[in-house]
Length: 104
Image (tube, rainbow, N blue to C red):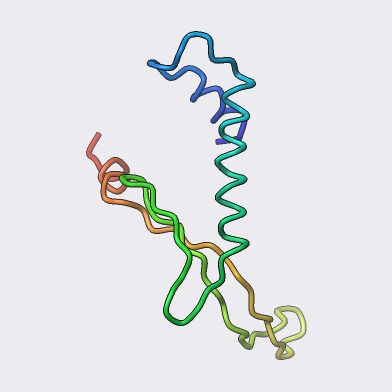
């Protein structure tokens, strides 16, 4: 799904006020993603805590640190070091798992 498809689906959702425009929906969705991004950028991963965002029924996003590791150049076979990085992990919630695994 693309951003445009997401915005269109949200715009077509029943129960939204009739005066809401596609532009307003886009601003709200953009604001939500910007806040999530800022939250994960500003908060640090420590040994005792990982920044996380939980949306009940959907899942949990967690900021994770990957350590430096060794690898191999696939073309030459020569060993190399892959630098550490910071990433976001996702664990689906119970409701999302049930929706994805329901029988057709």
